[in-house]
Length: 412
View (cartoon, rainbow, N blue to C red):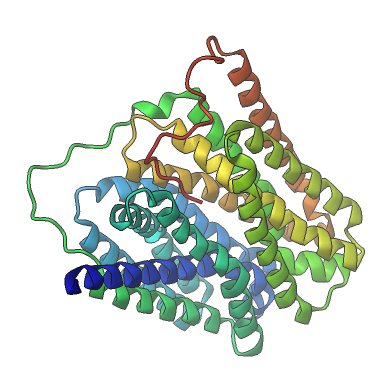
């Protein structure tokens, strides 16, 4: 009886380490949006330029994530994940200790290099050690870490950045990453002895229209929502007259909306993934349009900003499941990496377009205006997928593409 109990304790501790690590990654990825003014003042750059820290991180994740994951696909998961978390912690320390804008950018690039690899190994390892039949719930625990980071990690980071120093937010991420590393080192299963070289991941699924269109919808939806969210501080303070001290509480409410949206989106997507994808993406477009209309009025703007988080996060379950269910021909790790990159493409484009908008002197309150075109295109492509599925020969008898394959991992 002792040995099974020991294994169960180790499994639970491992999941704790995974959730803490995902919490660190989620906090690091999103906290910059809430402390842009503090970073800009501290480094003597414009807020538009400071927003490029988001682009540096997301762009690195997008480009390097699949490449790093594929290149190290043969490395044992324990070595891979511990080395990656250690590098992530080091990059966070560099960002926290930096005294210049280029040094902070360097720290963000270092952490972005291993973001995807960490999440991929967390999710595949979680599913591997999960109880039989609970693999999907195990993977969802990792997503929980990201969601809770939006609710708690980002507001805490913003609070530290506003009342101590902006570097404290990156210091928090470094501490969380270090705790995750210690737990993983203690209980992560040992790598199996090296055997025959593992085959390279297949790439046959990359040409499938359903997969490509799904990835485009993912990137465009992320770009639309994050164009506003990345620059939420200047959008609210300059565009609607919200006090800077209220930003932390607004981001807390925004994070709660994200968690509700993710939960609601999962329920909506059960059994009707494609329709849910089209519906939630269209809802994101609608909420962004309303945000443009109410911009300038503080209370309505705050309420609709929270609804942006709810609508955007409601797209995650359907988008992830659709991409995963049409990804035959890819290794699980590579499919997860590509899915993560799709979200981060949108984040990188959002940082770039928002920076260009603000640096050109245009009003921050009109940021939703440049979010609407990608949102409209995303909704149009989603409904194209619905139409393709309805018009597909034999769609009434074949296995629905909406239905994910058993054991296929998904990621946010």
